[in-house]
Length: 135
Image (cartoon, helix red, strand yellow):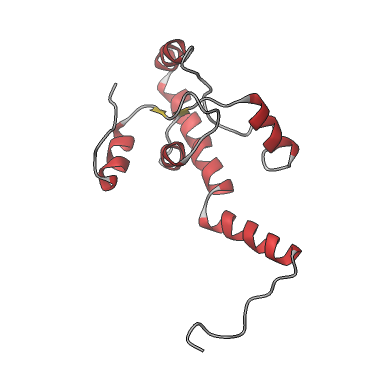
């Protein structure tokens, strides 16, 4: 097991690629950029997921039940969670990684985020400006 700290950002994807599992935060209750990087690289990501946050996203229609591929663990359960993951066949870890990559593509890709902003702008009846940046 390795902890990534104080390394140049360019080196992080290389280190994630070499890992079997990525562990993000275990306290706050939701995922952030490091978890996204791990999922985008097709890795299983361990992260604490608060049920109220999870249910909020499902209730708002932003997630489907069972869609979030994160492996939930807290500071109290991390040892057992890592032991469990270590006992899984490699193909199961690979399958979690595939779901992770698909999740990021669906919800966090440039295409997905752009479509969401476009939807919001259309709802607000905002149209692109006809004036140029230079004009």
